[in-house]
Image (cartoon, rainbow, N blue to C red; front, side, top):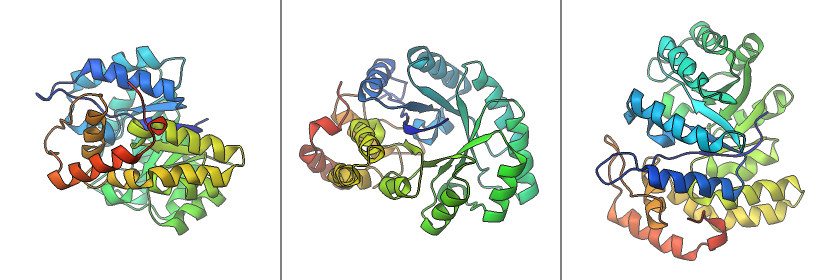
Length: 296
């Protein structure tokens, strides 16, 4: 169901902090031109926690009108209150997404029975669920035994976006559940390794800038051209690392600003990246082949 390259879309903003819809239009068209297989709206990269309910609705209306029928659409609806996650999912369903991205509840770190009930209530609404596992942000690493219960008791979970850096866990999941779920890489810097253990694709923040490269990496790998695929990955690897020199999406939005897709503005509590990181990114951008970056 969920295969290929999905861009976790950023929200271009004007220097004042207002959403820059002209830049957003260009970004959407550039993503489609790059050949991505899907778009994730209202994920972490979109700075969703800083968007008002009205802004979220306007963004979804704007983006889905331009994407529907062209690529798959996943909408982030997770929250650390189950009632809020259910409400978000109901609101998202008005835009007919192919799936909803539901992060494991953060900060309150639910116990196994609570976690399963959380996903059961969201899944009961009927839209396929992409479970988002990112222990580094949520503080919750789901044990293997709990994952097994989740996937057994919540059949609507169609995919897992995995952002754990524990490759033993990643390999165990990929091997055990290959026939049950689409296993999606959530770590841009480990994309080839995830593909090697059978991942069906990636949800990528760096693809905001480097979508053509990520699509090429994926397509070459699927064609059996693994050496060529890794060569493309290696050529952009320094910039992938630079995307996360500071908290996502600050560096990505700086890169987008350098290639004509809005300003570098982010909303507090995120702030402007350091002068040192800007200089590093500027130097790296001058070295990367233009064919690997989106074009305006």
